[in-house]
Image 1: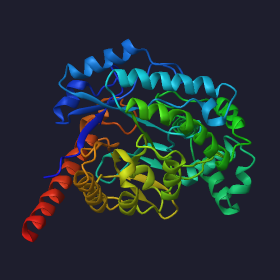
Image 2 (image 1 turned 90 degrees about the vertical axis):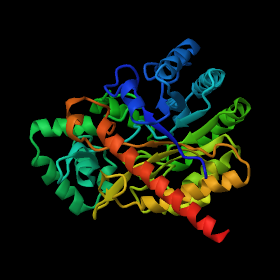
Image 3 (image 1 turned 180 degrees about the horizontal axis):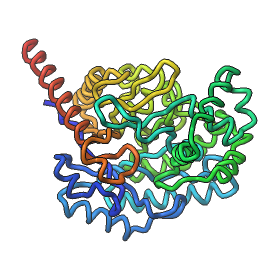
Length: 402
């Protein structure tokens, strides 16, 4: 019997309404968290790492994955202080390794960690989900942000539809749209002002995807050798959504992108966070990606999205969306078997149910967007059952053949 995936739950620290006591009751054995109170770019204090680890372990859980040690914007833009921030990053990795925490998820998305246009999209059964509506984003980009290049990027008919859409919104709804789009600051629930966001965009005016990719290569060339010495597995998270928005370049959206990244600096420490939600928001072959890139997967986020006709998407139930979760899970298990047959490490890959609908009492708590308790618990139960069913079926087939 192949080891089960290492079930984990994300926790945002002591202020998270989803407490460690609640997480322990889900049946997971691990926690995914970070020192969210430490500003991006600063070295994490070892005593703070141990304090958080001790708090987690006091609930009979383990701190399995750091998500995230955020990458400073000077590193992404190739700014004059990037070597300082890379040095700080490595110093943090050393402290994490000393504390026995050896998997680090990170992303290389410019400015925003993620982007949605609606954090409370009502579904027919009364639950709510996160949604990315292309028309709403166009309205913001064209007529609120007033980004000049956007008028060359959106076709005339979408510009007209976006204007009509924006005019249909009340002042309160417009403010809500702005706050939702600009809520994706790395690791926090803070929100940019439009003026602040324009200033950040200015830093990227001469940085296309090719240059951003070279800045990632520079980062990996410095960090991966050190991570390998420390026994730390670095795993890049795909872009969310997986296509350029608001004039910002994207370099981790497709199979080709991820393959290029792991080949930039070949190492057991240079790997992937396989997020089915991010990668599933465009026409990516997710089961095939697991088959072809599986050896690089160090961490798994499982969620589903439903892609709409115009390329918009909303977050669906974990087993019912545009992604064939059965095929994805089956190929993950096949990758586990390959690792076991080759006596490799990391067979029980850390996995967490990513995002969840707001269900019932979830509405009573102000959780980080997407991180409701019951919604994620439902997803965890479904995914756990799917994994068990596939493994039992595969083992039965093997028994028959032997």
